[in-house]
Image (cartoon, rainbow, N blue to C red; front, top):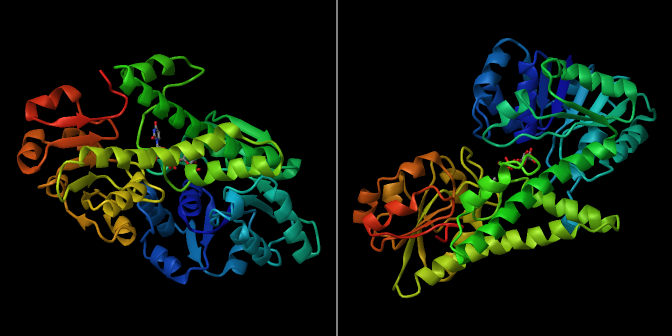
Length: 433
Ligand code: UGA
């Protein structure tokens, strides 16, 4: 099939490249000329394992193209996907101005019977609004607007695309749904479950899925707090509840509060949608407040540990919002570092991938090239991201180089039993025993 992707951000680019992998002819369009020029040279604006290799393979085969010419890109395409940004707007709802602009721009250029598909995470009801925008610009209703939400995780997006738990197709018309089913045929043939429904349901599925996952994290974080008070162990509790198939064992790891470009924004948008339609979502409203409070709480706990130390220094390991990404959006580090600095703490840091992006947002941090350099002469080491490499830190080496041996492990990567041997005061989450 011939597909056009509008927007070469994380979702658009990854999806476009993966659709080429399924055998489709894909043109990715963006108004950012610089970005398109870079992409044509094989340079991606973000780090995502597998995407660059796949992109270069399909560019060479002539199945993947990049352009700034939106009108040309969408002409004569079976499917035009809109994957432009939907930043947080007023009242917490997604700001749809980029989506509306894209709809206006493609309206005169699409061929009759084009299926326009919303990939961006949008306010419930947007597919219908986009249909009206295109119809009013075009003066005809000879096209369809559908919703096809994505469930890609940063760091494992390619695997999530090629082996998804399900494909959700939201279409208010049978022929339009069939076109999208054809697009995903290579995956559906392998038995990937399909949810075929209307556009409104598809839009809501995206928000509800992210809100539910975020609730799981918020819940386990609260249980971890309780474990700390009663000498409990969160890993045993998580295992014990997770083996109940109705609960499931994933997304039960306590942490410094969820971050990233999706959960914080989507939970707020979901709550705002509930308020707007007079069906409030109090669980999610509470979750949003608690998640922010959790990040602050970590900073306050660090400050308590440092209260007797003059001119304290903290070494942070991990500033990405999770491992295997260079993305720092809404990461715990972005919330915690300024609180520490305002309290007079000097901050050093190391992250395997995210330092360049974080340095622009956290200018007064001293960046180092490895974890040992970042923790040299510090009073407290604070692990915020679950990078695999941090599990095997050489504790003897750290013990020699830190000024005070306090380690606060917000991802439970280290073994508590090991710590006293090296003279560490060790804090982690939900391990009160
Ligand atoms: C999330 C969803 O998992 C994807 O299904 C969805 O497609 C995506 O948002 C999106 O809406 O586009 P992502 O933001 O890449 O994906 O990251 P997650 O792996 O879900 O992690 C989100 C946050 O929760 C991270 O800060 C992570 O550290 C935290 N987390 C995750 C925990 O604290 N504990 C866990 O057990 C799992």
